[in-house]
Image (cartoon, rainbow over all chains, first blue to last red; front, side, top):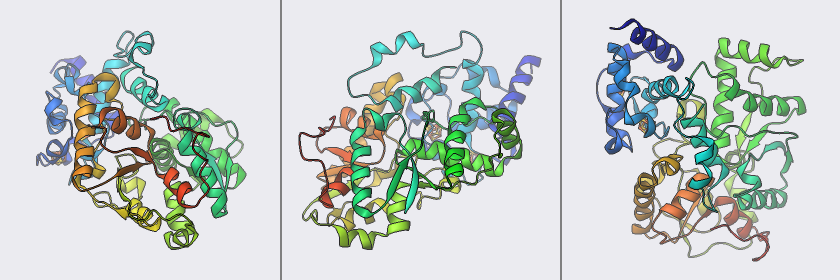
Amino acid sequence: MHADERKEAETIIRASGVNVRKCMKCGKCSATCPNFDEMDIHPHRFVSMVEEGDIFALMQSKSLWRCLSCFACVERCPRGVEPANLIEAVRLEVIRPLAGNRLRPEAIPALLDEKIPQQLIVSAFRKYSK
Amino acid sequence: MKFSYYPGCTLKTRAAELDVAARQAAEALGVIMEELPEWQCCGAVYPIARDELATRLSAVRALDGAKRLKNPLLTLCSACHHVIKRVNNDMQTDDDMRAKVNSYMDLDDPYSGETKVVHYLEMLRDEIGFDKIRERVTQPMKGRRISAYYGCMLLRPSTVMRFDNPENPSILEDFIAALGAEPIRYPYRNECCGGYISIEARDVAREMSRKIMNSAVKRGADTIITACPVCLYNLNENGTGEVPVVYFTELLAESLGVKEPEGGLVHAR
Ligand code: SF4
Ligand code: SF4
């Protein structure tokens, strides 16, 4: 494992508060994920890949922008692993560096309609930008 | 019964009807909702990462504000409730987080999660009681078939939210029954509407919202109710349009006979 990748893995484990060793690989988190079809790497794979230190691939994953923070995987994991917390921690590693933002403030006006609630814009901005 | 009330950003604007109807109904029920002075937006999403400090502070300020006023904190928007309740839990259980937040905020009296956070629905169920509400209803919703949409934020994670059974909730169905309508249960009531994905990939939100609405309509619902402005937006704008989606407080105010007459506050549908 690359030294930078090992460092990323440590940051992700610390920031997420997840103990990846608790996972028993049952796949329930992915089975219950409402956005499974839209993801290239599924929640249970996030757990295994963080355990293996395979972080750079996760940082490229489309799933970072498809997780809804619905907490279904967190609620239904029989081992209390909280896979969504790992997805969040990897996403933060991507958007925290300068120029890492997925959603830029200038892009927002074009995405709005008359009825869109502020809460939705704030949520998206918090999730896709730093 | 008195509460410090945290409205949140959206209830002052796009979701004004959620707020106005809640205040009208509370007044009729003898509940005092005293708006928290100088509240700030809660951030709309709970900062999951443990190294996120600044994004937790507005919730802590609201919690500490209620503590200083010696009131429980009443929430109404599902997302605000989720964020504030979970940050409060962090302040109760995470020593490291509590120490960092308190040294940053430098309050006269450090905050350690003393405030009780109560969602408006919990207030109806636990403080007033649905039986009492049933007695106060002057315009019962006879013949109406209403489906509750819970979404995610009120229920999960249940270890922290402790709102209701996360897989088979009943608080909104009991609420609907108290208003004299028939609650229509359906499988998708606690699945996600897509939330903020509407900004990133609207087609995804569309598919999810349609599944939810179809599921309720198939079982004969004529209306869907929710406590969340994002859920309402997604279901109304990205759903099938077959049935209207309204805030639960609108039905409450209507049943209690205190709702603003038509034309006063037009629903932003
Ligand atoms: S549900 Fe939990 S235990 Fe099962 S694979 Fe997912 S993270 Fe591992
Ligand atoms: S929180 Fe994300 S990964 Fe977990 S079930 Fe929801 S969408 Fe899927």
